[in-house]
Length: 275
Ligand SMILES: Nc1ncnc2c1ncn2[C@@H]1O[C@H](COP(=O)(O)OP(=O)(O)OP(=O)(O)O)[C@@H](O)[C@H]1O
Image (cartoon, rainbow, N blue to C red):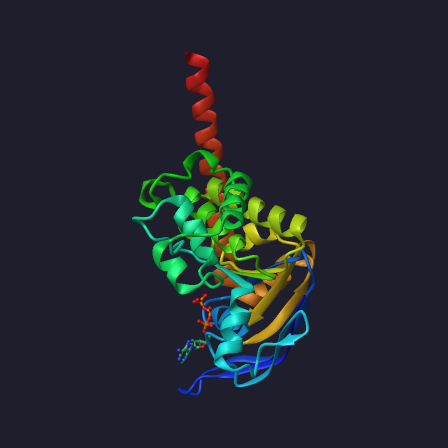
């Protein structure tokens, strides 16, 4: 379980990015973090693993207080937090398998990581994870030979190879088309739910968040303004979070994506029928 208590962040510039943020995420729950640009979503994710130092407040992972840890202890805790990024952050010239195994780098001794000799159980686990994310057939391919959706699957397998107790996920679908985005979101939520992993996903696409996550937290100007079930996220709340103009534009964009996809599917059907 992740516990965030009265978290505040004021940057040196005087920007108050987080204001008294409090919530808990139980095992297996996937939280979609939404809010307009500048609301504090990235700051919150980064304060949880202390890439950004909170000004005050407490972050606990399964009862271990992360705030206030020394550097060595912090490194140890960070191993238990898997990160998944928008741009995948893979090593392009390495294979899929090597990228997944790099999730163990925080655990193996330096000489082993240097020679890339990983224990057998790490390799067996990597094979299992590649199978889970649907990439068994691609283990030996170089990362730069994969599609965007496949790369994100490698990113997910690498984070899981770490044996994390929490996943922090930053815009996992921002570089993907709508269909692949849905596949990736479905996979993430299934994996978290089945393995009891709590997760926070910083996500711009509200419709996608509503469709797949278990719970939504809405931030506005550093404060939590919504915390509830996706079904409780009404038009009224969304207008309050994003403002009338931006929410109307976002809704229109989502509707256009769906229309475009339906048209493409109909065209594919027509072509198949004409064969
Ligand atoms: N390194 C920094 N130094 C000073 N101010 C910062 C810094 N990083 C972020 N901020 C400010 O903190 C506030 C929250 O920013 P943050 O990046 O967390 O928002 P966000 O919700 O993730 O936005 P976006 O969706 O655009 O990524 C903003 O006012 C931003 O200008």
